[in-house]
Length: 126
Image (cartoon, rainbow, N blue to C red; front, side):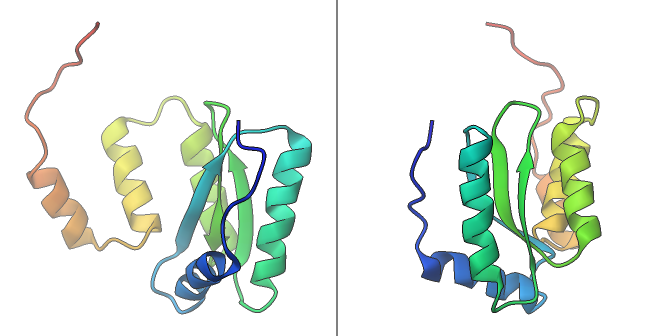
């Protein structure tokens, strides 16, 4: 479990800047695991950094117990991402496509990634 935030202000500011300038709808700066108090510290740190940028800081809990942290350009981006990471019935291929779009990849880049993907259509149970 992470109990210390090691992200530098420059690292966080760069991510906020890229979202503010429209390079991508959202940027994920890290993944954390912790209780409510720790998540509050994370959210507070992101909020302090975002004061100088027009971005929305977020901490979104995933269905696996971890939380993703970062900045978004619009509230609907946070809502969509929260739905994506908390849902258990989203097909993997669609999850990856949505993440790609939210992280700023073009439709062409996502298509190319799909085209180069593996043709294996089964899972291996160990």
